[in-house]
Length: 362
Ligand code: ADE
Image 1 (cartoon, rainbow, N blue to C red):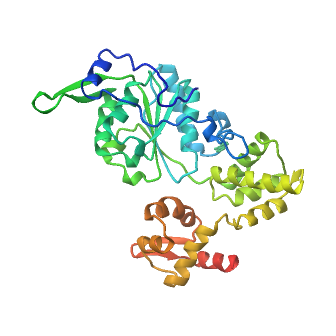
Image 2 (cartoon, rainbow, N blue to C red):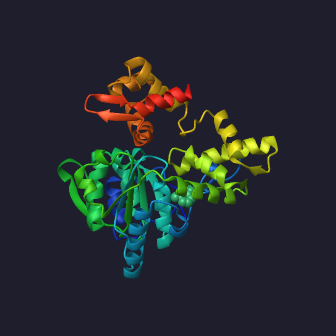
Image 3 (spheres, rainbow, N blue to C red):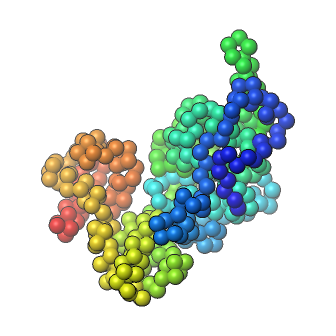
């Protein structure tokens, strides 16, 4: 599977009239920013590609068993029919593997996956450029799909439903509508905020799947797999310690593992045990539950500034100098899942467990 960037010089879809129609209005229908994974700018400081730890096939993908099962069946059925996979919406907190799953699906289907995000699709010609260049059965991954603007969203409706683009050609009194066929494709949308998607867009996805935080066993297996790929001698107790402290999130687990590897390398440790993991992660101020300084600052602000709440999201965000949307979509979900805070109609409330955790952290 290849992941191709903008400006790759690929021909348009080959649909008759595509270039002519685009020429009428969208003369410079350039493709917007499309990520090229595995290219030099996505390398970590240690020289290993940032995506080198991603599973490539469903068989290698650990956890999210319901998601794997549902998509595995859909892929097999689609392959046997020789059609494009139904459109897929993946939602849930960041770092749980939405992009990874899109790449896995493309690999399983033997097609390319083009990756972009809604904020990169600002102008109508951005999304038109992408859609007309898709080849049959290819995947188009749009991250943060809840941020699509109205025009882009409305262009997507007939594209998703009938593999057709409805374009306006010309201006003013000479403006005419033209319908342009495009290749059958699969849209994989990803969002941390499924509730912010309009219902017409949500309803056009045939498969809607939530990604859950990973359990300890799955995380331990993910860490051991990554350690193998990084050629690290990691004890299973050490993998469990990383699993405990990664907020249920593989992306964080892999990041922590790289920090542990640094400490092990500098200290000259060949074999990595749980005590070394503890030492390395304490250095990075990641506590026993996986909370970082940022999380603890939120809980402390609730306790010390507002007696444990209830306190509004906007007030907390202002106090932390944080964007409320990020606070709600990125920081809070794990704290909620751990029962450290609660959302109530009157605002956020620190729970007894949250107070106890702050006491331990202090
Ligand atoms: N690395 C990151 N996420 C993973 C997953 N779900 N399975 C295996 N390896 C991973």
